Image 1 (cartoon, helix red, strand yellow):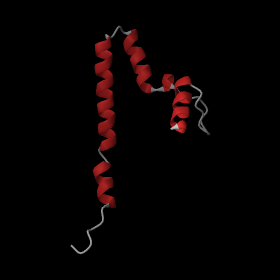
Image 2 (image 1 turned 135 degrees about the vertical axis):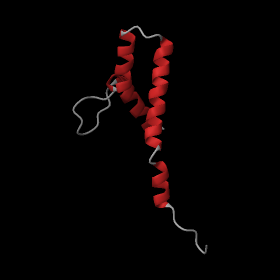
Image 3 (image 1 turned 90 degrees about the horizontal axis):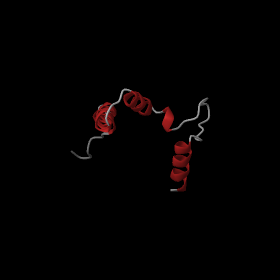
Image 4 (image 1 turned 45 degrees about the horizontal axis):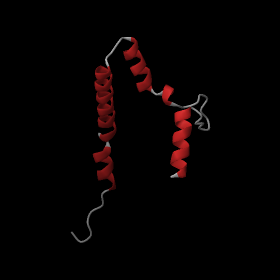
Length: 82
């Protein structure tokens, strides 16, 4: 738990450093934050911003979940004695 709290604090405060990375990582570096800032600049309502983020998250999860069945089947072994 201590490790998770430390990493979360470093990420949130912008002090997280990963070897080999040139720029610090933080909330301001996330693509979603840049997109929301552009939406706000264009006077999007809080509802429109929330719908946009919900759609982006759903598409991201769908993209990540697509290969899971193939990975699962590649690890499946035949049952013994069947």
